[in-house]
Structures are given as C-alpha cells and as structure tokens.
Length: 388
Image (spheres, rainbow, N blue to C red):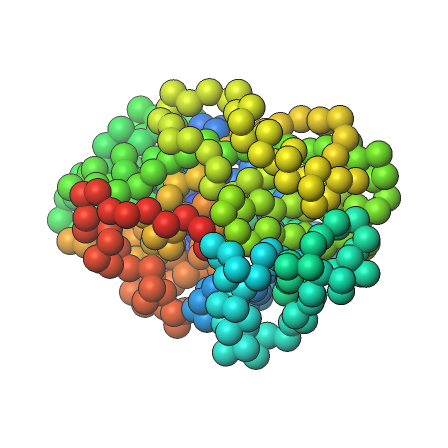
C-alpha cells in the first residue's frame, strides 16, 4: 500500500473520523486516518448509542458553533442516506440560584436569535409529569435539542471517508512523529507514512501526540459513566414524549429518552475520577451511581428501574473545559482538536473546521475562544472549572 499522503489524521474517534470524512470530500485518496485500537472501540470518549445535541449553550460562540454542527450533520445525513440526529426538544433546568446559572444560556441564545421558552416548575411538570420539582426550580426549553446518534454518526463518517477514497487503518498505534523539511513522517503500527499536513484528534492520548512537538498541556482525563434503567413505565420516556435534559447545578446530571436500549439513559456530568487512559478499568464507580440514583429518586422517580447496564467512557478536560481547536505552535502544518468532554455534538463541524485549517490554513468558524495559547493552558497547575 502507499505510504505518502497529503493529510494524515491521528485518532479516529468522533472528531477524528469527522476530520477524515471532510478531508476525504476534498482530497479523496490523499487522506490517511490512523487509529491505535479497532474502529468503533469503547476505550475512549465517542461510543454509545447517543449524545445530546443542542443550541442551548453558555456562550454565543458555542451557540454559533452548534448551528454549524446541525448543518454539518444534515450534510452527512444526505451523503450517508440515513438519519443521524433525532430532535426531541431539550430542557435545561435547576435551582434559581445554582452553580450553572441559566441566565447565561438564555443571554447566549437571545444574542444568536435562538427561540426558547422559560418555564417555572409548574410549567415543566405540566408538560412532563414525569418530573417532581419544587417551586424554586426553573428551566429553559429549546425545541431543536435532541440526540446525536453517536455510534451511527462515527460509523457513517468512517464509511463515507472510505467511499470518498480515504484510507483508514485500525490497530496502528503511533510510535513516532518527526519532521523532514516541510513533511511529517509518522511511525504507526510498524509502518512509516509521510504527509504534508497532520491532524491530531487523539482525545485522552492528546498529550502523547503533542510530545512529538515538545508540548504538554494541563489536561485531566477522567473516567465517566452512564446508566440505562429499565423504567417500569418505558412508554412515558419515548423520544416523542420526553426531552433530553440537563440538571444545571453542581453536581450536574443529564439524561435521554429511550434510544438504543429498553430504558432511559442517565449520568452525572464530569463526576468521574482522574485516570490513566491506558490502565483505567471499565468497572463502574458505585459512588457515582449512588449520586445518580439519589437524583432520580428526588426529581425523576419513574425513570428508576432495574439497571440494564452501566457503561464507562473518558473525558479529556482542559482546566476551563473549553475546546482546543488550533494550529500547533511551531508547526503550522499541524492542527489539533480536543473536545473537553462535551464535543460529540460538534464532531462533524469540528472535523470540517480541522479540514479547513489543514487545507486552507483558516476557517470562517469563530474558534478564537479555543486557542492553544490562552493563558490558563500555560499554567503548570491551573484552577479547574468543569461546570459549564
């Protein structure tokens, strides 16, 4: 097989597969994607049936990026000939005084002309009697929120990338990246490949990839988990009867209607412990599960039922929990994206942005807030703030 390409993508999870796909639309057979494990593996961040997609975000640049995400997925759906996004509506709710103020979300949506409803506890329970809420709780409802079909989305990106001519190789861990003039030489899976432009989408292994550029970022990798519950009244959690939802406080929880399994999915956001992605176990954390169960008992009791299963995954967290999307300092022909544990909804849009940075050197998307050079990433021991 050939060993020289114009573009090489390191990592074929959600974002990397998106980058390989969008690059393949422009460069066809001149694209190589390398994955250290099997395609569709469960060791990283991107697998499972579902992820929340929404326009409701705490900053206008994220709202604008979310609009790009919907457009990107719609384009992939046309190319793939299959549905990848299911709109259910979405509810962000919590105490009126909370660690994640809803007003910042409302202000961002107003600034971007995104319609939404402000609801008090009675409004919420009238529409969705599954919730049991006290009067101090309020929420924001946005009707375009829903489910990005994670495993199906990533598989579509990979299949289409190959159909457009890209080469994707699994079980090819990277063991070296060197520069030879204007080219990169990548050693992976016992082979050597060269390219003009390199895309790094390595998730929890980002610092391992960046070491080849003499960089080390203050990233924390945590082991998170989701649980599917066999609700005794599964019909009331059907996607046409129940929204995706996020509890906006610390701790933060989120959930989905029934999709992919015979029961709703619920989890704590950023509730996991720090781990090494290479040695972490796949065992659920009983304390995390206890917090989720206690939340459901109080606010959403009819979702509780026998556990179908609990599944673990990883988050790769910059200290401010903002994305990193940028050119690599000192190597302008290398670009990187790190999703900060909330990027799957943006995976195709971020893949497209990476392809634009690699092919054109620039993008029309506003990624100014996701710079590698922002001050907090220059600190050896930065303060951490994960509640967004």
